[in-house]
Amino acid sequence: MTIVANTVTDAIWKVATCLATRGRNLAFPDQSIDVAALRDANLLARRYGVDGEEGTTLAALGTPLGITRERVRQIVEKLIERSAQFEFDIPALDALELACASCLPCPVSVLNNHARTLLGELLTFEHACLFASDLLGRRIARMSESVMQPGSLRIDSWAYAPDDDDIVEVDDVKAVRSLAYAMIRSCGVAHLPAVAGIASLIYEEQGASLAGMLQSVEGFEWLDVDKAWFWFGPENPGHNIILTVARKVFTVARERVDIADLLAAIMRYRSRTATPEFDRDRSLMLIPPIHIARAVLDRLAWLQVVQYDDYWANTPLDPMEELSETELRLVAALEANGGVASRSELRSALTDIKLITFSSALMTTPIVRLVSHGIYTIVGRPLDPIAFMRAMSPREGMLNRIEVCRHPDGSVSFPYIITEFAARSKACTIPASAVPHVPAGEYRIRDSSSTVDCVNRSSGATVFNRLVHEMLVQGYDCGDIVRITVYPESRIIELALDDAMMAA
Image (cartoon, rainbow, N blue to C red; front, side, top):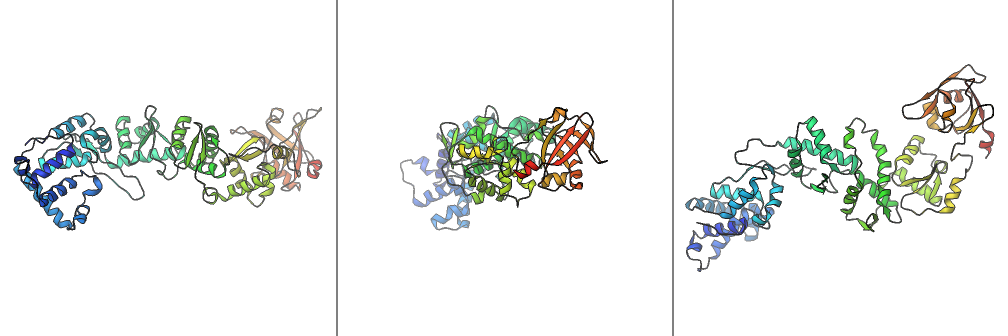
């Protein structure tokens, strides 16, 4: 019997009706079909997914009709056995097989999109193949098993040509997915060439098959198919640096934020992940292009686009959930100072926070920005000029900037605050403007036999090793401002309490 149908879905309905009526509907097309036959045809067609995958279970089929799962199974099996009495010619299945042959092997989700007009609105390629196999004894494609792990995205099954034995293993897909996840955690999106490069080195996977593997993971979406940028949606993996930073920024913002300011906030936040992730492959920490970052933000339901590249949160965010305790206190201290404060003002307001914690938070948090040397404000807030001028002036003896003085005798002097961090590290960092006048080498402390070393570190900083230790030995303490005078020619260092600064 030739089944004429525009889609495989229509063909399944016609085959099911034929089997339920024992072919009478084809022999006598004008004769009405009884209720029992219509029910059986409906069960068989829905069992093969014509109404969507969710309604294919025995329980989902039987419950609306008030019959048991076992009775549904018996009806479906009876019709499948009856199919052996017929020989069906289904051109719609021939067209489906021909259309998909050039795509194999590939994830089934790719075939579902590729052959949607042939399949019908809700039918999947898997169920079409299952129908062909069970009722016609015909294999259109081979299928691998799909995988669903608790707390993880579903890995789609793969389709292969019937005679293809080179099957992608699920473990390979999981490994490639892990690489993509690692990149998304580091830079918010994933780049196929970068992931492919690492995968080829570690797992010997090639780019073409790798792209297919990634597309078999639930949630896969191209952000720029031409440039091969993609992600798995806003929820997977659990940590996405673009989303994390955006939520922090828009928690404190009071006006719209430009995409460039958001990327700057991401770069600040990235500096805190660089150290703990130092042993990871650095190629997974790329900086996404601005149009890719914009593509991510445009897909967030809680953000509203304003004038192409500005954003505004249309849903209030809870600071207690989005910000750390140190960030909450930084915001409170800045707001208490009119939204602008110097580093020394912030430190004075947060003296109970360990200096290393305070310094790290101020350097890496995305919710503040540096508006001048040592002057900070909240991202997404207007800058108060009066508060800014106040913050620019030294207050309570704490220095907002280090003033380096050159003297006629060739010596160089500068004030140095003995901080808690300096007391622990025992290294005195030389101000950048003084470095050209202080050559590296050994120096002697005046009126002492102790020596210190001036060293140029690989980080770019120039320090006096052991100098802070000598200050502490001579009776100076944390919080003191010491005037350091360096005599480059004689290689002598002179220390003195900076009374003027301490009294200010």
